[in-house]
Length: 148
Image (cartoon, rainbow, N blue to C red; front, side, top):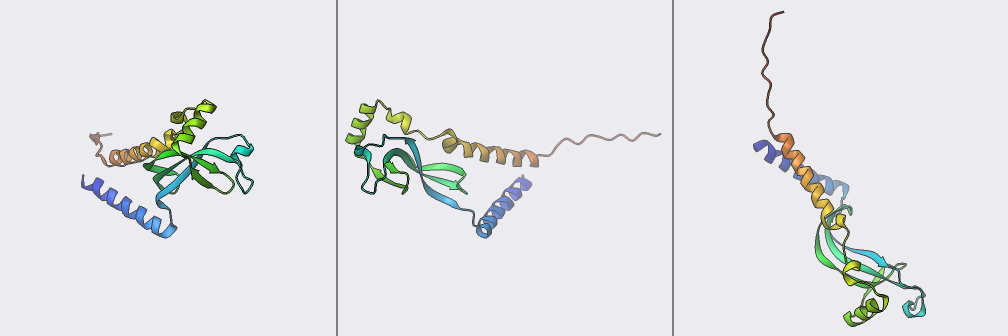
């Protein structure tokens, strides 16, 4: 048990040292995911000539932008300008009216991918399980000396 605790302490210190030296980003970040391409009509055209699309925006705590550990703010649907990477909040009444006109489901558009929601947690659990398994003592086979 002491070896396991020592290994976890060393691993934590190594991660902290590596992140301070290599500048691995650890923390919260806001993520925009385009979920629906709106038609390029005058209705969805901005003043700068770009067109709007539907996207989800959420906040997550992650490591190095590839391991989202947990969601800090649930996703919501927003209007998104892909070229300038800006998003705009949509009033609930307008959003419901638009989704009803396009025959879209808010629940289907507002979902997070499996990896974002659970994938990194599974990777961390498997990694810790391998650390624990590697520190468990194994059965030693008894060696019986024989004369040749």
